[in-house]
Length: 103
Image 1 (tube, rainbow, N blue to C red):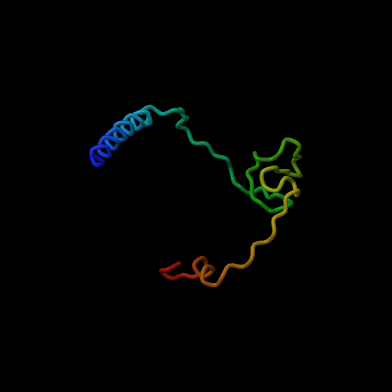
Image 2: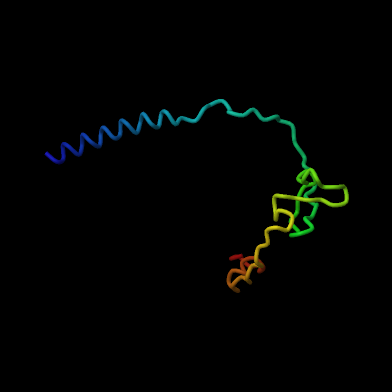
């Protein structure tokens, strides 16, 4: 009797799963129509004076001036300070710095 109950429960679960998978079908048409033209942000070469993070010029806050660029996405203008990272263990550092097949 247990095998029959298990088989019925399993078959019902499979049918329910099939229905749910149909509901999750991926749409064929794109949800967002993006323009096909390229968008160029320019160089990421504006440095935050507080944390030295690199930004695009258009990321400046509205109260920035042409001489003083202020940003809110990196360190909130010096309000957030993270401790320096500790040195990597030699084995991991060698993966970054060495020129061998394992790196």
